[in-house]
Amino acid sequence: MKNINIHPAISSIEDQLVRHRRHFHQYPEIAYQEKQTAGYIIEQLQGYDLQIAHPVALTGVVARLENGPGPCIALRADMDALPIQETGDVPYKSLNDGVMHACGHDAHMAILLGVVDALHQTRDQWNGTVKFVFQPAEEGPGGARQMIEEGVLEDPGVDAIFGLHVWNYQEFGTIGVKPGPVLAAADEFIITVKGTGGHGAMPQDTVDAILVAAQLVVNLQTITSRSLNPLEAGVVSIGKIEGGDAFNIIANEVVLNGTARSLRAKDRALIRERLLEICAGIGATYGAEIGLDYHDGYPPTVNHPDMTEIVLAAARKIVGDGTGAPFLSMAGEDMSYYLEKVPGCFFFVGSGKATLAAETVPHHCSHFDIDERCLAVGASVFVETVLSMLSG
Ligand SMILES: [Zn+2]
Ligand SMILES: [Zn+2]
Image 1 (cartoon, rainbow, N blue to C red):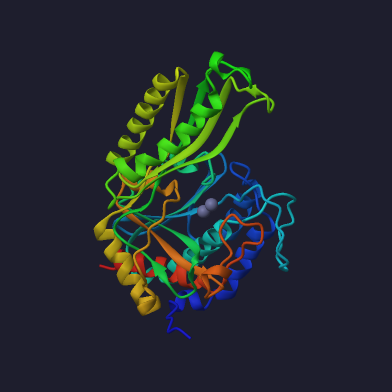
Image 2: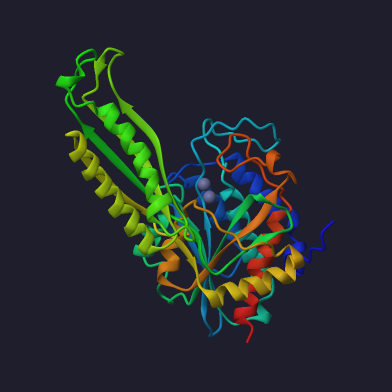
């Protein structure tokens, strides 16, 4: 058993954290529908000395705990669930058909509610303001951006922001944190190949859109294998192809839909440029008309080095050696929008029940569940982070 030191203000309310998480888990709501979720949060925030703003970004809640002069720190939790039918057999199974907290945002909200209580309890140990940001629509289209537009980082201005994600790929008792990029830019592209259809037996009179699409699928892989510096990360994946009518007809049009991931702005620009060049080159080679629609998704999530040091120190206090290997993934997160505006750090709290990677239940899976002991760990790291910044 690992040596874990839960902050005393959290260990006294551990059962509350679990109760909150299970409530959220039973009543999940998808992006921008988090009305009951917001209602529950506001209800739980009664009785504390807080300024509460709602609705922010349609369904978001921002609670401000003012405790004398000092910096303002924001802590963020996302609120939305996913359109998935839960298949796991747990006593707190989703009661909303076809909707499930399969990413762990139920845990994030429970943790933040616990931190409200803990920082309220420990008011004599710190000075400043803490903003508790409950944000909708992380799974898309990106509630963070709307929260920022509606002023969540202002009045008073936020000096630093922190967020976390429970993470089943890490076992319980570990914290993943590193400076610099930790999650990728998550862009989408749609390529439309227009050829000239015709009889399957007379290809000489056609421009075969399927053959051109096949060339594209293969050649696009050279962006990451040949154009990108192998020491930097990038992904180009085609997730969907549509085209063709019948076995004996040469296809007129094929649509390819994919995602491009990168950790740095220059790599993001390079991938986009190479996509354009390859489309143009293959179009010219085969006489097809190729169009590219490129949509910017969430930017890369980039941690500030000083803020990361503070979280690292807090994490070491809680999990000691469990402050594990630097964490990095090509998934995307809209926490990135806040981190573009103010320094901060986004870290990963081990929630995996299994010790074997093969048995790990991935996020967004219909029987996703977490080791609930991670709630107290995540909350403790938040509390230690705030105390180290706001206690003189
Ligand atoms: Zn997710
Ligand atoms: Zn998530």
